[in-house]
Amino acid sequence: MQVYLDNNATTMVDPKVVEAMLPYFSEIYGNPNSLHKFGTASHPALRNAINKMYSAIGASDADDIVFTSCATESNNWVFQSVWIDHIVNGDKNHIVTTEVEHPSVLATCKFLEEQGVKVTYLPVNSEGVVEAHTVKSFITEKTALVSVMWASNETGMIFPIKEIGAICKEKGVLFHTDGVQAVGKIPVNLSEVHVDFMSMSAHKFHGPKGIGALYIRNSQSLSPLMHGGAHMGGRRSGTLNVPYIVGMGKAIELATANMSEIMAKIRAKRDRLEDALLELSDTFVVGNRENRTPNTILISIRGVEGEGMLWDLNNGQIGASTGSACASEDLEANTVMLAIGADNELAHTGIRLSLSRFTTDAEVDYTISHFKNAVARLRNISSSFALQKPTAGGEVQECELHHH
Ligand code: 7TS
Image (tube, rainbow, N blue to C red; front, side, top):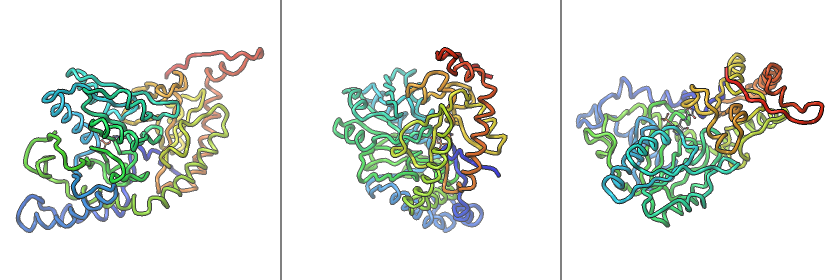
């Protein structure tokens, strides 16, 4: 058996999505901006896909949803264009974000800091959540943008976006949310939540990789990141990726149509897996379940280094993550775990398990048994865990964990 539990990194494309996309490669392949019938033949499918996006996130006709190449592009677009529009060509100089954003936000902020922008990185509480009052206390007259993710890719924790949106509205500050891990997993209704910009990515909800979108409230101005032909009303140049847009539309429809039913099933499997793994001694899971995306577990097992555990799981045909795949090539401590106050040793022990609607009960059973055996094996050979065990005198000795 093989088990894929890295659905926060990417998901399998649903075969129904592939089927919907196929005609738009070699049958209906015209450029939608061409005036002839080859071009216009794609228009019904494009309209259909766009309509599905609007209804899935509760956008209104007055809003814009612009397709991009990925959420990394959507995030870059918002930050770089708010910088040009409101800092370089305006009187603001400050951006508020969080310590736990995806690297596509954090690296863009670092770039903007090098250009002289002041960036505040808000901390999370012990549950891994940024609290709304913390956001409020850091907004100043010079703040151009607040950006807080809707749900964390690492912990699955859901942030108080409705409250933060209301604060930003009251203060007259632009509000962006990285909705990548929320859309398709939890209800997202922008008719009830004040958000100016929201980034999305199809490959997190069983759509294809390489297609994302940016929601723009009230079609407000945001200078383009991509200059070129007047595609998408001049907002994002580049020939429309018709098959992928069709795929994103189909994927969001499948993910949101019966979301509560689908998610209840995923949640039941996730909870069963989590309960079983928590039977192991000296383990903890970040954040309470009720306020977490239903598919995610970030578990810490004292004495078991994350990379060693991943290697062992991989040998058992189980794909998991130590955190963000985007950041996990360097064997750094998990920054989210450090942010929630874990010590350096614990911050090397995080394992992220993320399920999907394709995860089966048999796969959960197999994972429980392999995971428990792996922990026993690795703790056996872990000198640091042995050294931390209470000595005969009852004291606990600390020992630094070494990387291999
Ligand atoms: N934002 C969040 C919150 C993400 O989780 C990711 C991908 C992105 C943006 C980037 O999306 P893309 O469309 O540009 O690929 N996150 C992860 C992850 O957690 N592990 O691998 C990729």
